Amino acid sequence: MLSLHVLIYNEAMVESKYNYYIQNGNDTICLNGISKAVFSVNKSSFDFIKVLLSDVELQQQEEAITKELVRMRFLVEDNEQETNYLLENKRKDANSSLFHLILNPTQDCIFRCWYCYETHKKGEMSKTTLESLKKLIIKVLDREDIDKLMLGWFGGEPLMYFDEIVYPLSVFAKEEAEKRNKGFFCNMTSNGFLLTEEVAKKCTLIGLNTIQVTLDGDEKRHNKTRNMKGQPSFRKIIDNCVGYCLDTSNNRVLLRINYTDDTIRLDFAEILDIIPVGVRAQIEIQFKRVWQTYEKKTDKTPDGLLDNVENLKKKGFHLSCGMDFGFVEGCLCYADRNNYVNLNFDGKVYKCTAVDYNEKNALGYLSENGDIVWEDSIQHDLSLKPYVEDTKCMECNLLPICGGPCFRRKYESVAQNKDFCIKELLDTDVDMFVKQYYNDTLRKIEKHRTLANI
Image 1: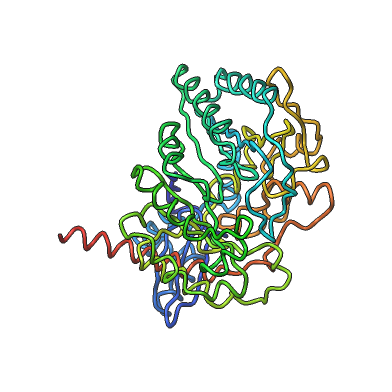
Image 2 (image 1 turned 90 degrees about the horizontal axis):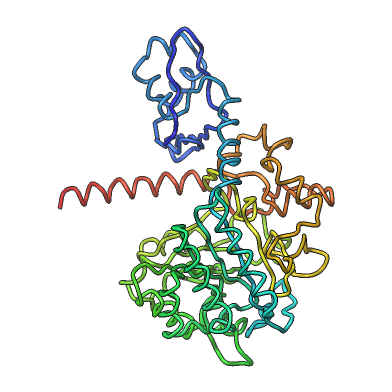
């Protein structure tokens, strides 16, 4: 819960630098990026509020309105305190008691998608690496500062070695965590083609309750991109995702739709209408531009993106991220946390999962004794403080809804002198984010009212 400022009338309150005002027809939507408080007012009311935010005498006269603006954090004692609040949240999240271990049992894959950044080396995690990994898991669970372990399965395609690696190692980690009364969680990024009914049942046994799966358009376009030596995959992947959700109501599918300027014009509400209504609440949809098309994009939001977001919500699907902006309360990415490691099948360790797994990008290795040996000095230095410190993000009013640079972009800014700010590549802007958040809030309020009247 946010700690609210106490209003002291003999001290001037100042307007928060993290307020956003967006014109919406004849009204103005007002949003604070830290409290997430949002409301809409007409022009005369907005003009009055703007004067009050900077006039201490008016604040004293309008006690009720001022208290409400303080509660919602539109008025604050000091903007530096607001920035420090965001920094402290990032520090806490970066050093949380959760240890996140992403494992690549292989780099091989049954598909060869044209936009994939990986080279797909053949091979699987060796028995030697598996034994060292077990030692690492025990050492992590024995740490007093760790009370939860999360295994994330990545690749390549991790389901290629589900019975040989994923399932037995997950069982081992789960049992070791339970021995120590510590939490255990499991998730996976997969293409979904091998997610059979038998695999889904075993996923339930190891607590693997979240799987991210990707689609590439409608059936025709998807099958052209994702096929196993010509064998189509769209229908099988959809059926497998539905079966996974039906196995237990705890299971969730993050359905990531990779789009280009062409495919985003498709009607995904119609395409995904084949998914039964009863499982749609378990499926979250995320739109993500194919990274090779960023340089070709226009400045405006691609036709179809916002329509697809709204239409899918009407169909009962959740949208985990419909915008490039969003509330960032701690770290921007899991790779930004210090208690996080991505271990490749060859024993090399990484932070970012969005780079090719080669010698150049490796930051260390797993020793035979089960220790992570970080060899990269830049990585070590970056772990000492939040990535936004000593950057232009400290002055930027978008920090609460942008989050600043992730590990990869901060690393590149230090190692290669690259600018980590990529606002010109985004498909949506702050105006769109604020409007959608406001509309979503109205929908939730209306839903609660409807339920209350039943």
